[in-house]
Each structure stands twice: as structure tokens, then as C-alpha cells.
Image 1 (tube, rainbow, N blue to C red):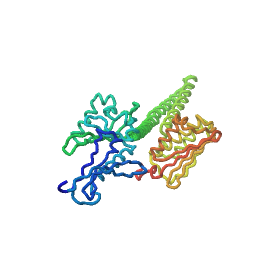
Image 2: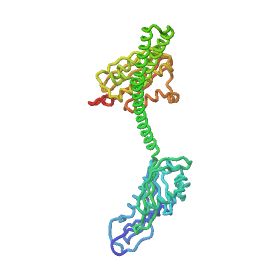
Image 3: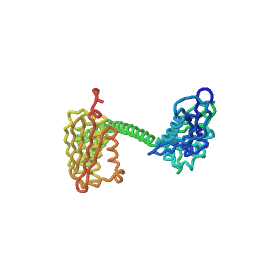
Image 4: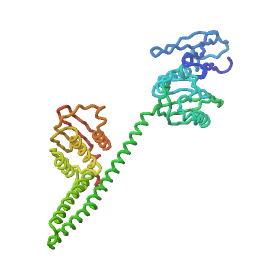
Length: 433
């Protein structure tokens, strides 16, 4: 072996020609100096997680003209060992599907993550075209072939989209395809890495739905405010003007002395009806958006709400406010008012309670709201309560304010709601917003 010593490169098969098991048992070549020359050794590895002990098997001796060196003068074995360790590492990854494709797109290797995500065992998928992972729509649009062509021309592509498991179910995947080339530039195949992003997609959809819900709630409150003002200012003023006209008519008729008694009685009845209409308009306007919530604040609005439920349902509602020191933002005040309103509505519908207490206070930089009734109580069941839109609405409002809510109840023991909101998240800014 003339010239500088060169260890023969280990003959590692590519993943396109051998199975993974055969690849891991490949034998790198090394040379050991002996008194009569160099002897070729084949390094056989038996890789087990608990014992990675190699064994040497001598082979035919080499010519004695080989140069002197250390007892072990091989660069081949460390590289081969590193390659095997890398393959073992890839195989152990379970959160990512990592596998190779040949230049035509057929699966050439398979790791545990690929089996976990896509559902195929190695023996089922190796040799199959990777288009089996795509939807029928993508296959019809030639997406698999297009992605390989782009990866071959650009070196690497990344994509997100729906992919298909063995059982036909779909999952949202982040996919990278990297072209693998030989030193001479020849295309050897592709490395493909797939990650299941379905949970992230669902989270993004949830965040989008939450943002949409917040927008809808805001738009609804604005519309309620507009309708309430129109009922109060426009319709209310017209009804008051009509009442005054009828009163003047009644007065004129009485002074004239020529009006029959039944006409006077009719005008009086009309005044009573108009009074009732005015009261209804005010009640409807207040239900849509109580004016005192904007004019006098949350505490006054809750007192008005308590009086409404007391008068309409005979429900004794007490409001205890120990949070005067915290100026609430309009958004937070509206959300808290609506949660109390929803809680009281639930009481009248379900609890058969006669008393409800509403308490507000500030403790440890938190705004806390406690609502408790003396009703019949219930068994808290996640599956059954998921259809209670009142409780779901409360949970959504609390979540949008970055707080937490707990429900507590038992048969015969009433119902309790505890809401905690960070004071910094609900307090008004210097401009009142």
C-alpha cells in the first residue's frame, strides 16, 4: 500500500438497497498493524441498548509494505460507528416521522415516529410511493410529484397541509423534503421529515374562534346600547309627547263641558296604556343595556338588576360591594354584569332558590366575584354541563379576561360560582378605557 495510509472506506449500503436491519449490521473495514504487515479486520457490531460491545474478526493479511502507525490506524470505523449511532437516534425519535425516499419517491427507510404518526409498519410501507400519504385532492393536483421536483431543484421545501394515515384519517402536517445528492451532484433521494401539527391547528382555530366570539360580544353590546338609546330617547320621548297631547285633550274637553263622560274615560285609559308602554320600553332598554352601567358604574347596575329579579321573580338578591377601590374598565364591567345576569337567570330557571347573594371584593391583586344561592343544587357533571350555555358563556367571558372560574354544588346544597380576575386585567386605564 504505497504512499500515505488510507483506510478503506466502510462499505455501508445506502438505504435504498438494504433494509434498516441489514444497514445496522453492516461491517466497516479497519486495518491493524502486525509484525509481518497489515491485517484487514471486519468490525461486526451487535447493537443492543444495554450492551454495545464490538468484536473483531481477523481476515486476510495485507502486504508488508504498508506504512507504520498506531496499533489501530483506521478512520473508517469511527465514522461508521457514528453513522450507526445516528441511525439508531433517528429510529428512536417518535415525535417526528423521519424517512428516506428514493429518487422516484418510493419509501426507502422508516422510523418509529413515522409508524406512530402515519400508522404503517416498516414492512408495509417500504417500497411504496409516498403519494399514499396525500389526500386524493392533492394527488389529483399532482402535489407529490411537484414537491419532489421543487425539492430537487431548490434543495429543500417546506409545506403544511392535510396528510392521510393508514386508517384513512387526516392530520395537519408540517413537512420538509430535502434533496440528498452524491459528491458528484447526482440525486440519491430525499430526506422527508413530517410533524403532526393537528393539535396546534386546533389551538389556532380555538384562538380564532375566541377572537371571533370576543368580536361578536363587543358588536352585540354596541348594538344593544344603540337599541336601548333609541328606545329610551326616540320611542320614549314620542310616547311622552303623545301622553301630554292626550292630557291636554282631556283637559280641554273637560273645560268645554261638552265632552261625554265615556270620551274622558277613553282618554284616561289611553294614558294608562301609554304609561304601560313607556314602562315596557324602559324595561326593554334596561335589559338590553342598563343606562346606569355606563352612567353610575357596575355596583349601581347590579343593584338595579337585583331589584328587577326581586320584582319579577320574587327572588331575594343581595349585593355586597367591597371592590369600590378598583375602577373597572368598561369591558370588564360589562362582562361582570353579564355574568351576574346569566347566573341570576340560571337561578330562576333551574335552582328553585329563594335567596341569592352576590359579593365583590379585591384580595391579593385579584378582583373576586362570589355568587351563591340556596337552591336545590345539582351534581356537577362535565358531560351534562357542557350543554349549559349559561355556564359556558361565563367560562368564555372569564377566559377572555384571563381569569379563572369554579363551580361548586351538590344535591340539596345550592350552587356557588367563584370568579377570580387579575386586577391589572380589569382595571380602567387613565383615560377610563
